[in-house]
Amino acid sequence: MQRPGEAGTDRRRAERRIFDGIPESAGRRMVTSRGGAAHAVFAPGSCTFNAEHHFASVMLKPSPGVAASLGSGKIHEYDGNAGTIAIIPANIASRMTWSFATEITMVALAPETLSELAEREFGTGRAELQPPPFGTVDPQALQLAHLLKVELTRREAPNELYVDSLVTMFGVHMLRNYAGVGKLPQGPKGGLSNRSARRVQEFLEVKFSSKISVAELAAISSLSPRHFILAFTKTFGEPPHKYLLRLRLDFAEKLLLESDLPIAEVAHLSGFSDQSHLTVTMSKYRNRTPKQVKLQR
Image (tube, rainbow, N blue to C red; front, side, top):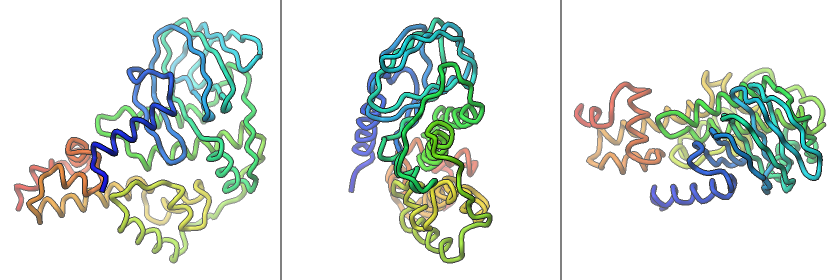
C-alpha cells in the first residue's frame, strides 16, 4: 500500500510536469485525472509558454497593459479585464507580458483527454481548439475560475473529486465555445436510474478512500461526465464530491470511536492526505476535531 508521503511526492512530481515553468510560489495547484488546475498571482513580468497540455487561463481581476502572441502570430496589446480568457493549444508556443500584478486561474487538459471528452459529450473525437482573440471576456469561464480559486485556496487540502468535476465542466465549456464541435446534446432530465444509482453507491462505499475521478463514476452509469454530475446531484441531493466527503468523514469517525489507531493512520485509511487534512475537514463539516471524537469513547 502506498503511504501518504509517497502519494504526496508523486502528486508534486505530476504537478511540476503539467505546470512546468510556473513557480510553485505563485499559488496552489492540483492534478486530476483530466489534467489539472492552478491559482496563481504574478508580479509584473513576462513568460514564454509551450506545453504538452492544452491550457486556458482566466484573469480574476483587471490587469491593464498586457501584450501577448500565439505561435508565430503578431503581438497583441490589450487591457485585461476580469474574465479575460486566453487559450493555448498543446505544443503551441506563446509569449505574454503584463505591466501590473495579475491573478489568474489556469486549467490544463491533455489532448487525448479533451478528445475523449468530446467523444463522450458531443459524439465526435475531434477536438481542435480555436483560440479566441486576445482580450476576449468569458463570463462563464470566470465563474468556473472563481470556483476553482476558492477550492484551491482553502485552508484544508482541495477536494480532488470536486476539482476534477470543475476541470471537466471547464473542458466541456472549451469544447462548446472554442473547438467548433457544436451544441451539447440533450441530456437526461431526471436523475440516475435505480440500477445506476445502486451501482455508483456500491462503488463509492467500497472505494471511498481511494482516488476517484468523475470519468470513473460516469462510466459506471454509462453517462457522459457532465450528465453524470447533474444526474447524481439530482438523485442524491448533493454533488459527488460532497457525497464522497461524507463517506470519508463517517468512516473516520467510526475508526476514531471503535479503534485505538493513531489519528494519522485513521486519516490515511479514510482517504485524507494527512492528519491535518482530516482535522481541518472534520472541524469544518462536523464541528469537532478527531481528538474530540476520541474523547467520546
